[in-house]
Amino acid sequence: MSRAYSILLLSAATACSGPSDTPADPVTVATSGKRDVPVADVPAEVLAAANAARDGFTIREAEAETRDGRSYYDIGGTLSDGTEIEFDIMQEGERWRVVETQRDIALAETPLPVREALVAYDAAFVSTRIIESVQTDGLVIYELYGPDGNDPQGRKIEVKWNGESADLLTREWKH
Image (cartoon, rainbow, N blue to C red; front, side, top):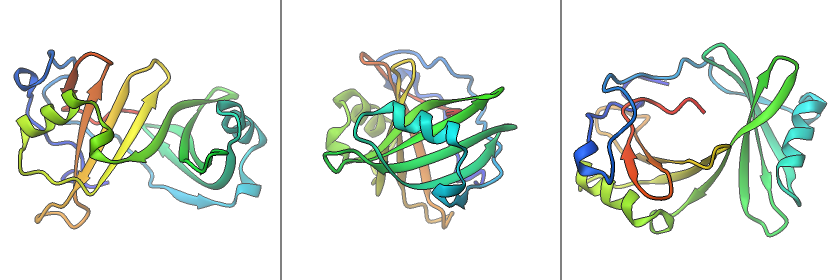
């Protein structure tokens, strides 16, 4: 992931509902890059973690990568109602656990304070993709992607939602 594609935001705590709890220095997550993995080659423990995360989940695809020295699998598929969903599964010792659950959504599906924080930061930003990333502790990170004339990979803005306030992140969220 290029540095320009990463979160390069200034602290916008005054534009949000509460102060940001992240440092002001932009930081990116070091990654090996994702590689497709045939589902048949995914370790049984990873598949079990994905299947246990949600009833009615059908695995369709898998990717593997190393982030900040830790092994991850992204397991994508559908729920019984047709909703597309992805589980990010991290290795901890010999154990694999789901660390976040992601799905694509429309901007209108984000909480109003998230949209207000985005507009306060950059009213001209037009998102072309939004990922809702639910963390295991209940926090939600909204990953908003849009065009960037200077970077062919586009631009990414992340907003943290704790159920009460929205904060622009100045560091890329680790999961």
